[in-house]
Image 1 (cartoon, rainbow, N blue to C red):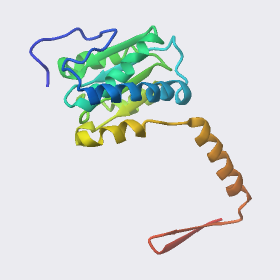
Image 2: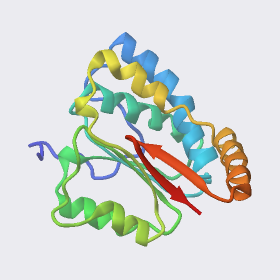
Image 3: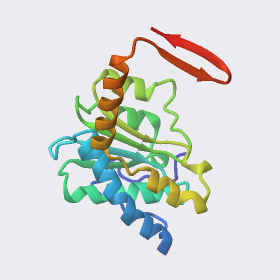
Length: 188
């Protein structure tokens, strides 16, 4: 849905159009650390790479997550924000075409952005553009917002180490038996 008053397609910062509650502000502060870790530790975003944040403000959780990414303006000189509800799909698609390999698109959606028949994630992947997606945030109830924010906590170093330990054990196995729903599958 496109609003009557059209804002600029690209802004260099984010300010919620609706005031955040005290609880939401606390969640923004917690989420800032988590999104910073996602960008730096998981995706290895460099300060020179573009961050393009496409968001809506249909629910408070999208505002919380967008505000957390908005704090990255202190560390990235090339950060852009677009409110999905204020622009046409054609305007947004045209801007997406200006992104280069290794740039990053962050989609913060109360539902799912519809850009006609354009398969956004697939096209971004083909162009080697990093993508983070926070989707269907409208189904999360306000009393579950804290759980969602805490789920963003991620330590790739810990997961990488765990994955390597599991791989080392799997590599030593002659076969693996998987039992699921009383059904066995053997892999040699």
